[in-house]
Length: 349
Figure 1 (cartoon, rainbow, N blue to C red):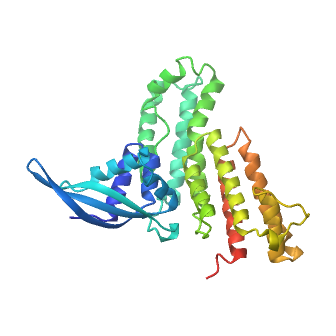
Figure 2 (figure 1 turned 135 degrees about the vertical axis):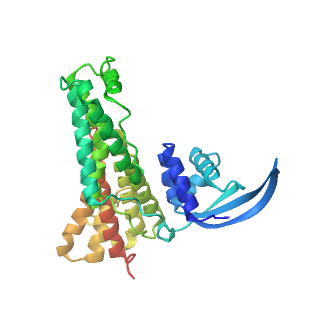
């Protein structure tokens, strides 16, 4: 019987094929640690073996997998049942929480730079064509084949990235049905609709060139590490202004947890003599850095921590937040967490 990490990977792909992206991301964070046959039963002419699958995973995945009746857990269990060998069935899925760095994870797929550029160009061309035919441009009959061929090209290019094409229209006639039903009465509304449809994907692809949000080495501060995992996951799933604002809220909470992890009122005091509240991250981090470094030449470290917190608060209340805003906020938060982790000795060999 062949049960190994590829079983997990096949289940992840099964979930992606069914557009269950969140369940796929949770399972992707898991690594198979052990499996064993725990019972067996007869199903007609078949003798089936019941399997216990033991996986290791970060806290964020563990919390989901151990929540009774969680819909994501049910989806994952169904996916595993679908990909297990035909002579077996899933008896139980048993997770164990470990530090994220101890989980053997499959690297998130990346496209080679030339392929990434071609994909971005293809999506830009598709976006322009959809806008053009809906705003007095070429007749659909003349360009529909071009649209269909390019749509297939985009889908094939996105498949290795485990990303769905956000465009639901198989041909331009279907797109015509959308814009002519009265919901998009003006040229401006049609341009805005297509821009909102494609720009989150384009932003993510453009930023992937420089890996906008790198995975963070766990700090050892549990709440901070959980917050950073949530930020990365929320950014991956973000699609609209409300999602981008929620990333900022998570960034703010991460900075507060960071300040609470390192600040000691007896040791660090405050620069202005005002006792900080439990959520006054700016005052706590400024005082912490000032005490730990002392030297005025490190004033920029204090300003940096303060600026990250202000950035998160500002974005949290910005109704026009974009993916760029959220990604920059997440990256700044990652940087300040790393900075404080280095100062505190958490990054020492």
